[in-house]
Amino acid sequence: MNRQNASSKIAKDHADYDIAIIGGGPVGLAFAAALKDSGLKLCLIEKQAEAPLARPDYDGRDIALTHSALKILQDLGIAAHIPAKEISPIRQASVMNGTSFYALNFDSRDEGQEALGYLVSNHLVRKAAYDTVKGRRGLDLRTGVEVTGIETGEARNTVHLSKGGTVAASLVVAADSRFSTSRRMMGIPVGMRDFGRTVIVARMKHEKPHDQIAYECFHYGRTLAVLPLNGNVCSVVVTLPSDQAAGLLAMPMEEFNRDLTERFGEKLGAMKLMTERHSYPLVATYADRFVGHRFALLGDAAVGMHPVTAHGYNFGLYGIRALSGKIHEALSVGLDIGSPVLLERFNKTHRKTTLPIYLGTNAIVSLYTDERPAAKRARSAGLRLGNFAKPFKRMITRQLTQTEMVA
Ligand SMILES: Cc1cc2nc3c(=O)[nH]c(=O)nc-3n(C[C@H](O)[C@H](O)[C@H](O)COP(=O)(O)OP(=O)(O)OC[C@H]3O[C@@H](n4cnc5c(N)ncnc54)[C@H](O)[C@@H]3O)c2cc1C
Image 1 (cartoon, rainbow, N blue to C red):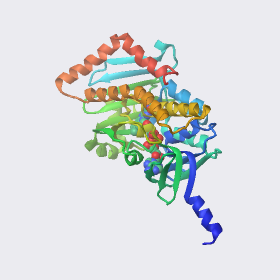
Image 2 (image 1 turned 180 degrees about the horizontal axis):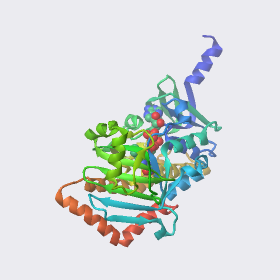
Image 3 (image 1 turned 45 degrees about the vertical axis):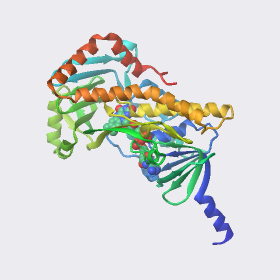
Image 4 (image 1 turned 90 degrees about the vertical axis):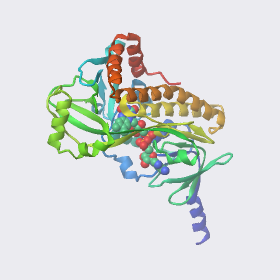
């Protein structure tokens, strides 16, 4: 190797950045968008190739966004890349239990709002986040590369890459899923709850209009959520014991259509599959801390939610706002962006935002999947109480519709 080749090999094998982001999912990409005007040198490392980031396939997930989360996507410039007709308002929500049609209802009009929240397909959020950051000056996108190790250092951490070579950064931010390997490499323990259940998701069209009402039916044995998309189309989310999931995934289409139509009491008339079915095992995770030495967790790597209360990506966006806000503050006064003080402030803020809802969600799941007689009575009483406890309903509706809830 001549001297010129040798020096360019060194340059390729090691590079210095201000921030290295691990994971190019909807959170990692949105975090890069949040730092676009910071002047920082960023590197985003993603194990998938670039093509599936640029043109992600439909993955069955329709993400319910709170007003606050949608506002963050607008502020980051990501929402502008999502076609307006692909954003579906949820005007009301109805929660039912067992075989009864009695419902706990939430209505956006109680807060003078047009919607409780908005549904957007996950693959469109991912595509929009990619379109927002691609080609950005100051961002080096390294795709098809996996992180294999993280070494901490006083002023910089060094990230080791599967293709060989390293990158060093003052701060490493991991958004590499609820089963984050970076979190493990940094020795951060995680609380994990495997629900032993799987969700099966798909889009269906139907005869009657849904009037933009979302339904959550805690049937016995199975849970069915029907989420209203624009037109006579909904996203169905069936939760069932994992040993029954393969059967429902393989069920012939006609039979599946009939099964869903009947389980939903023909409320929307005949329902028909429009997409293939996708499945996800239900495991909730909560990291013992969201920070380490020059290291922070974002997205599902920090908090992996059960989807019943639809908070996973919302929390990802709140985390982005909290961490990027603290980084911008530090930059404005010339402070270190990886300092323990800054990271601890982010840790505290984000735990305060997420922990009560994480615990509350798991408690709801425990109660509404318990089929002992006393639990069945408590489930039914819970909905009735909810309808009469107006402050409780207002608190939930406000939490979904306000736009300034995060520190
Ligand atoms: C059925 C279902 C319904 C949902 N509904 C809602 C909802 O209504 N509302 C809501 O707010 N949330 C919802 N969620 C949650 C939401 O989908 C997640 O919170 C969100 O996708 C998390 O994004 P993320 O970027 O943190 O992680 P991920 O999407 O898991 O992305 C992680 C990325 O990191 C990459 N990666 C992993 N390891 C490495 C490595 N070692 N090196 C490099 N790259 C790596 C992966 O390839 C991937 O691209 C739902 C989830 C499911 C399953």
